[in-house]
Image (tube, rainbow, N blue to C red):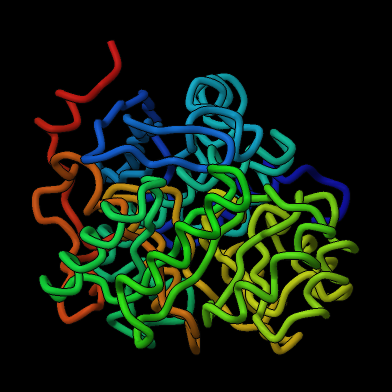
Length: 393
């Protein structure tokens, strides 16, 4: 097959493979934008959310099976370059057309076709990857994790994000989640306020929840190397367990220098969108923990490859989120379930913060763990009435 295009390779394989390839040809891809209110403000260093927006995706195969996908952003093209409007437009115009008629069961070929059709656009590609893994899993009556090596783990330690900006309210929120058996580890968003004010807030939260509760801070690129030199000793005094992305994503050398000055491990997030980014960041010591997100990797197979690169460097793995609903979170759990180890557990608390989840049976949170759903594909059934209700007009 040397000298022919990727699309021609896919067509040739479809002709020679058994009936599965023919029955899982992609017949139709539909997409729309959904706007979902959240229970309380979610404040980051660069935006303030009261509504979480998604792009939802429906893929139908030749055999009639339907799979579902979800792309998430945080308040538009602020956290990364994609907005829900751009995601939808690029799926319709560039990504979906190259997939119609292709066998969904050929996951790697699908990934190659998407990469040839568009540079980056990782959230859009991830939504498609979710949907085809869901559809093929439903066809074969197996979980999507089976296509990534099989299920190793069926539940994960959970983390809740504290991002209101008011210590008293955040302490009460944390105590409520502990009492309910939902979350007993917390990630605090910094970069929201002047340094002195937010460090006082952090001290108050530590006092309020007690010394035995694990606290992580997410600075969302809001500090400089000089800020790290000045304030990291305070974070050490507060027994912070992990620091996420303190410096801007393009300053991995400076982040590496800052990481070398503290005993608290750094986690790479915005600076690492795939296997190559992970490689570059780990080589310069920009972190010893890597946040895994489908919206960064562009699909389930690439997330698994990125995790393998990190593991080869001896880095630990963290299950990141972008406030996905149970639908998007379930796709992440399928990928996480196939990993040998997810050292830090996962912060997929999106299903708990949006008002009314989008699946008939939401993800199960119990005993401070979130549990892998047991059905085929992603494991959950979307609530079609709810999806219709939140669809952007």
